Length: 199
Length: 271
Image 1 (cartoon, one colour):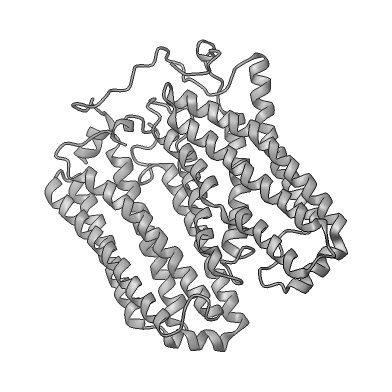
Image 2: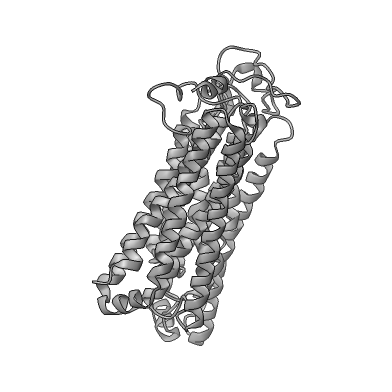
C-alpha cells in the first residue's frame, strides 16, 4: 500500500473535503444499504410472527448486547483519539490508542463467540426457527464487518506509528477510521432492533 | 493540521520506489482512441451488458427468479418441471449461451488492468482467470439444469437431487466472482499515477460487491430464510450486486478517457 500512496486525488483536500477519499463513502454507504435490507428482513420476520420473536428476544442475554455496545463505543473513541494524536504529530500515543482499539475489536469477537456458543449449546442454533436464523444472520453479517474493519485498524496502526508521515497516510487512516465508526454505528442500530425490542 | 499539509505534498519515501514520471502532461486513458481496436473494445463492453440482459430474460422465461426453494418437496418440484418443462428448457438455453458474452467483457477489464499495472500485471491475470472461472460456474450448472429438466417422468427424488447440484454451485460459488472484484480493487488502488487511470471509487465499489457476495458462505446450512439459496442475501443481494457491478463497470469503461496514441501499442501496455 505504501508505494501506492502518491496519487490521492487533488480535489479531496481543503475545506470541502470528505474524510478518507470520496470512494471510501461509496463502500460505507453501500454497506449501510446492505444492512438496511437486513434490518427490514428482520422487521418483516417479526411482523410475521411477533410471539416467536418476543420469545426469542427474551432468551437473548441483554448483558452481552450492552457489553458489546460499550466495547465498540470505546473502540470508536480510541480510533478517533488515534487520528487526533496522529494529526498532532504524536506517533507513540497514537499507535497505542490504535492498538487498544484493535484489542477492543478482538474482545468483541470473543464476546460474540461466547454468546453464540451459549445459545447454540442451548439448542438455539441458526436453524432452530426464523428468529434464530435472523439473529445469527444479522449478528454474523455484523461480525464479518468487524473482521473487515479490524484489517483496516491494522493498516491504521501501521500508518500512525511512523514518526514521519508518508504519502497516502490520510486516505488510509481516515478511511479505516470511517469504516470502523460505521461498524460501531451499525451495532448501535442492531442493539435496540434485536436485543431490546420485544413488543 | 501540519501533518495533513505534509501529506498533501508527498516526498519520496526513503527506500521506496518513487513513481516514474509521466512522459506527457495530458492524463492518460485506458481505451483505444481510434480504429478497429476502439470498436472491438466498446463492442466487448456492450457484450457484458447484453450478457446480463439475456441472462435475466432467460431466467424470467424459465421462471427461476428466484429459483425453486430448497424446501420444495420432491413431488412438487417434479410436478412443476413436468408442467413447464419446455418453457424452462427454452429459458435456460437463452441464459447459458449468453454466458459466453461475458468473456469479451472480462477481456476488456483485463486489458484495462494491464494498462494500469504495466509489466507484471498480476491482478489483470487474476481478474481474467477468475472471470473465466465465473463463466464456467455459470455455464456448467445451467447445462446440468438442462439434464435435470430432460426427463420430467423420472423419480422425483432424482430430479430434486439434480436441482441441488445446480443451485448449490450456481448461487454458492461466491468466492470466484469475489476474487474478480478484489483483483480490480487492488489494481485500481495500486495505480501509481498522480491521476489514476480509473477513478479510485471504482476500487471501493468493487470491494463492496465482493463483500456483498460473502454471505453466500452460510448458504449450505440453511433450507429457508434469508441465507438459503433463494434468500435475501445469497440470491437477491448477490444478483443485485452482480447486475449493478456489470452496469457500473461498463459505464465507467465506456466513459473512460482514451489512451494517448503512443501507448496504444499492440501489446496494449502502458509504459
